[in-house]
Figure 1 (cartoon, each protein chain N blue to C red):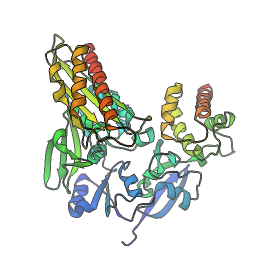
Figure 2 (cartoon, each protein chain N blue to C red):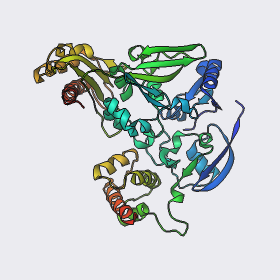
Figure 3 (cartoon, rainbow over the protein chains, first blue to last red):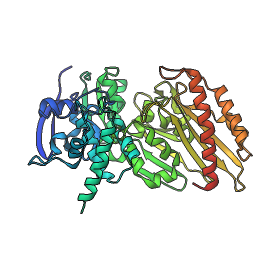
Figure 4 (cartoon, chains in turn cyan, red):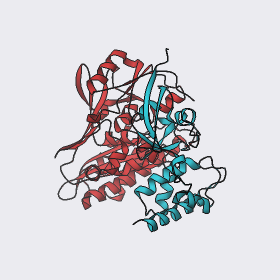
Length: 163
Length: 291
């Protein structure tokens, strides 16, 4: 089959990009190989592990279950955009650091993006709600307890900082 | 783990999407949420030549309500249903079932039309729509037809959709009298496919006697399974624990799950019966309490 290409214009972490892509290119591969934003990790490529989670127009989605061509006109946020431009970590990143919420770190970008959207929508969650929100992100190192502790701490920090 | 090449076409209108489907037939698939289709394509279990992207068709993504029914556009995403309080109070079975569907990231993309068209027998919404006697509105360039859910699901991952058709809308009839619903399932982990799940709806008359029962299962057959006939003994009664336990036994006698790597057929049968009893009890209490 002749390889058709499609123009895609989108913003990632506030930066505008324009590329020409094959229709079958997954958003996860597009971010990593075309835009060289390799912070978005690729684990299972069938929507189970959550490592590739990014925000699409603010909603957490699996970037391995979308084609790049579908994001034309969209705003994508990835792990590279979480810290401020001067390098100050977001409250969730800080809490993960302080509570030792990662070991190998492979799942961490997906967890941070999932929980960024979750805590934005629900800044006062119960521990059970945090665990349910994390259910779509597999972590094989930590046993989750430190991640849950970090998210409860991050939620407190976000609430304390709210005007 | 990369999809085979395909031609991608973004549909500009429903008519455009339908004419493309008529042109390409079973070579083409509609791309809605993609949360079942894209994993199959990544594994190359599915290799459509053409993807017709319908995500821009906002006319397919509406939730409408009249006195007698709720109409859901096929492109309505799970997350939109979960956030719509009016819809959840009109169709409380969905409030029970939606949180069981995969994970938040999947529910942000996946659509009700894609779910029902995929017709996974372990999925929640086929069983829920069968319990609710939802009507499926199918569109093609040839016109439009409506099917009962019971006629829509015809086999494993198979519906009555023809090669040129799209499931465009799902109409859910609303009950007139006191009615309660409940969906329950058992899965190994939050978001996993159910080992067995049950949707129950109990309707009562003004005196609190049962006038109708709907009871369906997911995960225990090639399609969602309607076991309402096992519960007809409840009609005309006040759904005593004894009567419900008889239904449990009848459900366990009636279904024939295949068993899978996580659960033997006997275990699935056991779980389905227990869940049926619990869901019927809860549905009855909800009908009595008016919620």
